[in-house]
Length: 145
Length: 212
Image (cartoon, rainbow over the protein chains, first blue to last red):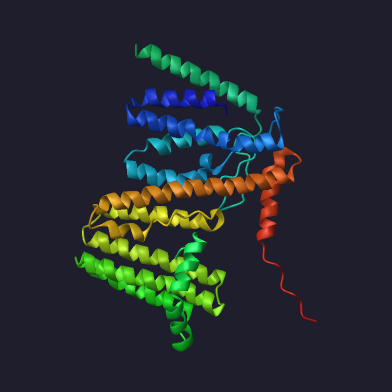
């Protein structure tokens, strides 16, 4: 999913659960900023593809795969909050609705999946989710004025 | 002991050479025997710490860690160094840490939750360190700082350092895999599954030669 959709989903969660201070930072860190691995992959993309806009490049890393729960759950226990796990799972759920290849348990397993709802075009899923998230955010802001 | 620092490892090997040769050539002691002896001493150290004798326990732990060096040195000296031996050494190291951590919990030096979290982080790091070649070595050594720094803080340090190293290790392994995918090229929509297949093929052991 695009960064805008992740930001909207995280913002909705932050508002819905009345998060404050450190919890807001953790929510955006695990709901949005885990996408930082795209920057780590950027040099490899430029080296192999160049400046062309080529779809399908493997931008993902274990930073935003279910395997990351192995370290995010202990971190959540250490911090005494479910915010990292909860927002990360939302991030995952959204990413797994897009059809590109994913390796959920790499490097422990070489299983490759394309996620769920694979018969519905990605653009439709992303579009519907985007509209729902925008409307929900606006609704929340409106009702809490 | 210093697998990630080969020069330091070689220097320690040279310094401990006479003892290593004595243990192996004169007494006929094998690397595996030293590994288990080191574990035995560490278990005693954990029990001593659990009984409230911290300094005596730390001294015994140091003896255990010194012995832990000699197993690798004897393996190299005797030419019996192997992946299986290295894995046994790693497994015994983790068991030793579990024992020492449990001893410290029993002595009331640290909470069970913090000790379990620190140990989990160490286990996670161990699970990828062979492939990532990243291990900062922040485990039992940190515990010697106990007389000066509170143990809960030291356990938090062990947890944080090992968890961060684990995340970085995962990314290092991912980058290796990305290089494999980039080298394969072709259809980007299927490159991950093709790279996973080629990696699995490489990891498969070669078939045993057939006898006539």
